[in-house]
Image 1 (cartoon, helix red, strand yellow):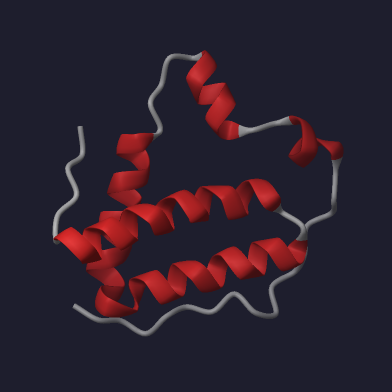
Image 2 (cartoon, one colour):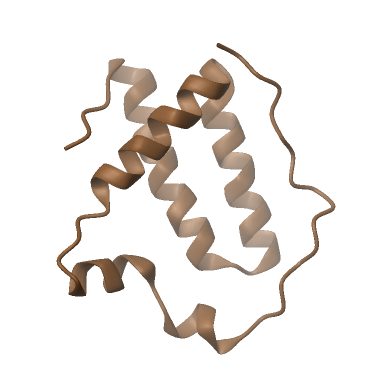
Length: 97
């Protein structure tokens, strides 16, 4: 199922705070004993189901938007989702634990 990509251009930039610099969701999850892999796999599968062959390009565009905004943590999250999307499109399956 292909859908039109939702572009985030023109969205309001969030105020830069020290919170983005001092907090990393992946290290917090690790400290709590939570594996982020299954969440990222489900996100990738959902995006792939929505956007089909355009999913990876859409995901890469989002990464660039977050980098331009200086939101490196969100860019990192989408980078990991993009890796799962790449594997999904290459191998045709994602296994969520």
